Image (tube, rainbow, N blue to C red):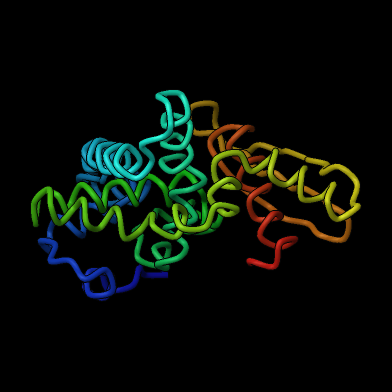
Length: 228
């Protein structure tokens, strides 16, 4: 299935991104390898990660003058985590715009936490190069504001496994039970986790067992809290 028109994404985000950079930001390495080793989005991802980190750090520092360094660092880690960025990406429907290789398409790559998070960072990098730091920072803050504005959701994004365990206990449910399986070669292994909490089941994927369990836990937390 072909990816959706990138111009619609730029319009949705309200940013003016150079079309070539936007296309590059949405090109996963699996697509690049299947199309003659064309450029892919990992360099933009590297840039976007830096822009994201700075924007989040400044916002947390100015918004929470009462927090010490350790607390600020913990909150920043939660907001820029793979799980949190994937949640932001899903909120804007990013998956359908990503250009993926056939193998990733067949295995649901457009909803994998790692791919969504990496593409989100690449998109931020493309915005920085096209429209400048102010526009890129503004985009970051608009995208992460739902996490910052909702303390419960924010806490779940920082530590979804603990948040799910606490919610299950509060609802009188047994402790979450996880099952994890992996697939793919050693250098590109993908993990799929399934968590069961009472009547609810949720899945999550990632490039490590930890990330897959965190992704599954966050989805289960959304289901149990009525925020799905």
